[in-house]
Image (cartoon, rainbow, N blue to C red):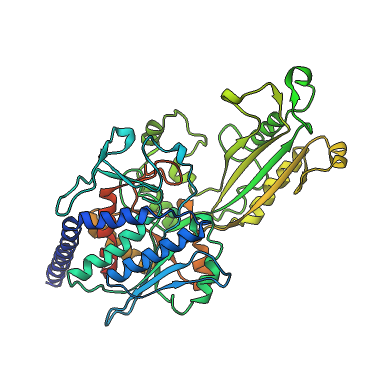
Length: 507
Ligand SMILES: [Zn+2]
């Protein structure tokens, strides 16, 4: 009998929830043109973190938008260091609610090279296309009031997916509840950062300064793409990140490659040999101790990973290559530290190619980290490896004396960095967030132990002692960080429904 009663109760709670979510979706449908118009207006404001004037314009725009969407106590949170991008904060207190969720997204974006964008596109002139450009999408007019628009359409602009879509989806998630007089089940705090793409250098200062204001039970981060299978994913961790720049030196001035070729040392060749010494043919990094600090996955994480659909064949086909670099499935690879070449530069190629021996060759190296790695220690391992290959390592341009003394010289500059973070898959409130996501799609989301990408989430854990989880909304082919960044409207609308559902956190 008790089972029947609980089944009936479950039916009514799921039924009630789906009615509420229908209202949310209906709100989005009937306000499509207004929401997209605001989104477009927001995307028109350039958002490179180093561009102070425009960053402040973005922050001011968000303040206004939040206020017009019934959010209270909207304010800018600033770091102690002056003139840094502010966080835009707001809140909603719900009578009787005992738990609080902070929703995070960032409004700054990666630097742009507008010459690389598809013909007719500009990073800060948002345009609507009927589909992805690769799939033959053509430009569309923005919808007029009352007209609905195909959810396969995409908006192209810097920040369209990473991560102004997150800001818009979170605010509209709340707004869609408010206008339908649906009361959230938790207190809500909004936290929109303005320098995530520049490494969140002042996040720790802001979190420390506003520690009591930011008290919560969990942080829900909206950033990154949904799983390549198209399924929603709830991500329990992120990798850490740091960089090194390696410069290998050749002759002091560029030389004629006929007169001196194969006699004068070629820095391009030396750098190539150095880099190729860092990996074996199976794609694993051969640098001493590179994987030593990695903390093994827990049984829950191993089980969750085994349930993640494999996308290796799909992605190889989509991306046009036959063999992956590392002989391990993509989902497993994300749980390992990585070493990647972000760029290599020496003399020119193509039309500007000349018969010279260049003076130097430079490589930018990206190190992604997992829990157990320390970013400074990981940098040191690479530096020790460079030394082990016979290089004299310096932080400065080599002097004549050093050039005379050492056969091989490598200048290494270190960037800042941060470590990885993971929240337990058994965290109770995180499980309820996953359930809220499930209620919007009807199918269990993928529970992913870690995102391949990086966010400075360890700072939340360190300063606020809280466990963040990430619920991305963007399509996996959104070109984030590159030219032609875009968001598929279906993902955007689904995102709004998902945040509304999380705000009505199920038991
Ligand atoms: Zn992002």
